[in-house]
Length: 337
Image 1 (cartoon, rainbow, N blue to C red):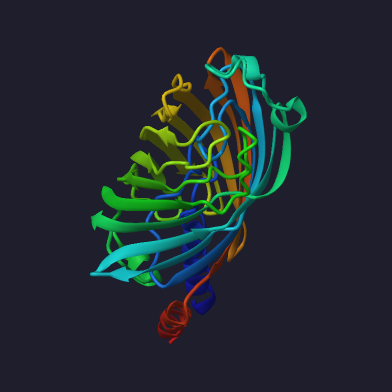
Image 2 (image 1 turned 30 degrees about the horizontal axis):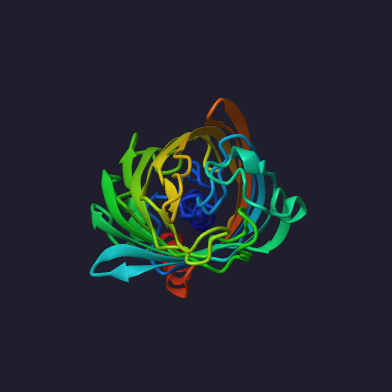
């Protein structure tokens, strides 16, 4: 009996592995299971790798009307969940590194066809290093209580609403002689309202719909490649994902992301190209061990008259709190007696 109880709790904990939110490191759809309710007092560490082909930089500061940007991004999210006023809350710290490659035709940029720039410095980009990183916060606003692992295993899953605040820091390498950089040389603030709609009440084989509308606001870049000040309008994003577990360890997801806006302007020169992209992908996830899970996504991005690709892989390690380990042991001991 004791072994059976322990296995039941471990099975539930396995499901929780994929419910620890991981922040996006791309401008397209967020990883599925990002917004599902986790237990409180939990640490999670991940490695995420993203291979992205589009006409938009990962920091959303440059759109190429006629060109493609390839981004190879690595991030190491660190996540802490805790109770705040009885609701679940989380802090995410996401240092980001990567490589950007692109070929830019100066004549395709409105207003800059006659600018005297060295093509070797401007048109061919291949840079590796630190990118703009993130610090994010979310808190439950409706039907999102802070529960320990056993309380969460008994909780009736309900429609949930969260508040989200994300801050992108200008940590990435930036050289004003280049139009495309690893960093954007400005701050970004994202406000969102993630929502979760449970599609069943099966604890080991849950199904969920995640929805996240958000707006991102940008500060000015005061050292653009031409001119004095680069401004950017707000960017609207709408991400969604449907996830279904087929066993307690294996799940698949369909996700999509749309973004619109973010027009840039340098001084009084012609405005830049509006961001308008749609991305969709298929994800498969599997729990390798009781505290380790992996997830892989393959998707496509539609922009202008071109199509891009998105590949993403992540591995997550979860460290349960001492109190959660004690609760599981106490429950197993009580049943064993």
